[in-house]
Amino acid sequence: QLQLQESGPGLVKPSETLSLTCTVSGGSISSSHYYWGWIRQPPGKGLEWIGNIYYGGSTYYNPSLKSRVTISVDTSKNQFSLKLNSVTAADTAVYYCAKDRGYSGDDYQYYFDYWGQGTLVAVSS
Amino acid sequence: EIVLTQSPATLSLSPGERATLSCRASQSVSSYLAWYQQKPGQAPRLLIYDTSHRATGIPARFSGSGSGTDFTLTISSLEPEDFAVYYCQQRNYWPLTFGGGTKVEIK
Image (cartoon, rainbow over all chains, first blue to last red; front, side, top):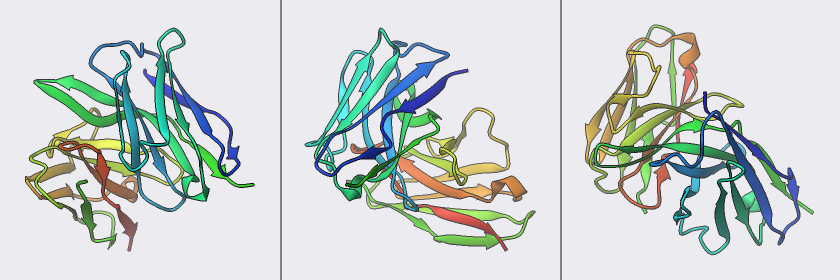
């Protein structure tokens, strides 16, 4: 059974960099045809897609965050990571990592079928 | 960016009743729309993808329909565990976007 687990600091100071890692177990992050993503959810609000990465390194980012976001992958550790710089209180959220449904038929299905439990990151001095 | 508008914001129903949730896209997303269920303190769970395909392990009481800009998630007979928040998500355009959610609460 595939499992994803987010890890990282729960508190980040304004203007600093939020860094999270997602560790994948029960399967290989290098499996072809899957993208791996980050999604966040401010307390009491809806879901916001941050970005996706393929094990080979290709990425898609949400334009609203693109100037501040970097997603990377470490296949040797079966992990992928999120860095969000210059954070403000508006970046306070539960951050989820997830796996998409992958390539099926003739295209990629960018829906998320496996999720981590989420980790709350608060931005505060 | 595709804006997904979900309605109603809250749906108050009793167990056994039928739930009909709506998701409207600001422009056509073809059939590339999914539905998720989220319970308090939990990650979202994929229910339906590409409008009408149930994800693995999802009961048959959940069904999806629609195309273009108007989509519907139907729960044929609400079970106690179905009271939750439901989100739609489109994959036809970058960035991937989610609707604002519909809360299905016990009446």
